Image 1 (spheres, rainbow, N blue to C red):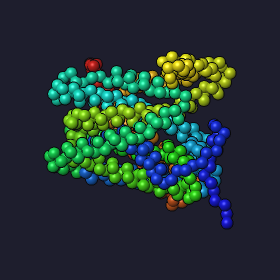
Image 2: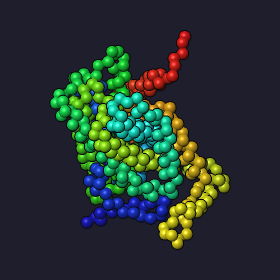
Image 3: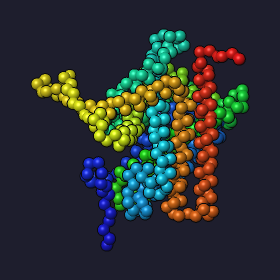
Image 4: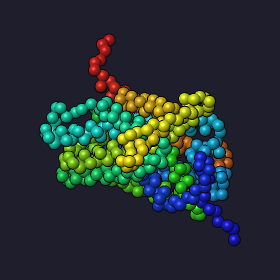
Length: 473
């Protein structure tokens, strides 16, 4: 009998083999953790823009498309055969095997733009939750609507950025693995608290609010832009293609990794969709067309103040860990590019060791020594400062999330998986399958472009509304 394949992968950085022990359930948990995030806070507002008919249907539609393209991508984990081929450790490695050099460049741009945009969104969301904590406690003390309970978000963005700067100087990502575990736990915490608060609000009045067509506005143009923005928010809530290959790389075999990953994607996206429908529809039934853009920070809840505080603190803690997870690949790429450009520069290769007297394992032990690399310090500081500055200039939760989702959904979740599937099976141009796949990709492209337009329009509108004065003709 043929000897079964062992799930052992060679780690090029350490020079060691490591055995993969992941199962369908661990992969499912990774998918749920990757998908469920700050996007859930906008689901009630999103359903409110689309209405009782279109809202749930769009959530189901995005779920089906995401599952189908995830199944296509799972078959590209190995090359050329999805069962016995060579392993691709990262998303861009799969693109490099199946597609042209131009597509590799486009994939890299799409990935890193999406990663950096997510950092901007996380900075905005975290500062919004910090403001909400202070505002809710102020309302509890002073009464709802007190005039001095609306602090500026810029200070909190700077505080969040400084904390991320400190975390970014840790030697490597595995040193903050515990933070990622806490981040996953807190993401479920604020998601279920939000669902509970919406359910309590709905039970308090007992009416199913909302309309079949969604929120009505005075101008049809504004309604159209709100619908497009809602589509971008849903796209942001479902995107996980850029980490699918990495999740699949944790699975043991046999059974074949692509089969296990398809099952995990089905279970993970199924559970996520059920939760999204529960939260979005419960929030819409509770608030109707007046559903806030952020369910935890948009004046929707201020009592019980301690529970709202816990939910917002969970948001902050989650985003502290998630920020580093998304930032580390950008840091690694920037530092690698600079090191390749100037390989002999002392500034780039130097590492200094600084003694920190206040960090001792015991009273008699010597001070702890901390390694400081000038290149890492400078590059990471510049990136985090620039990210924080952009977030301060565009502090619009729904619009930024919608733009990130719109920009990342089509290329990473649809175009590259479909293109690799066509290349892997050698589907000829003009065949029925080719036309069907291209039609799906084209429709998703139109949705992404439309959602981007809606998001940009909302950003422009908010910038005009926030301007201190208007120029006269």
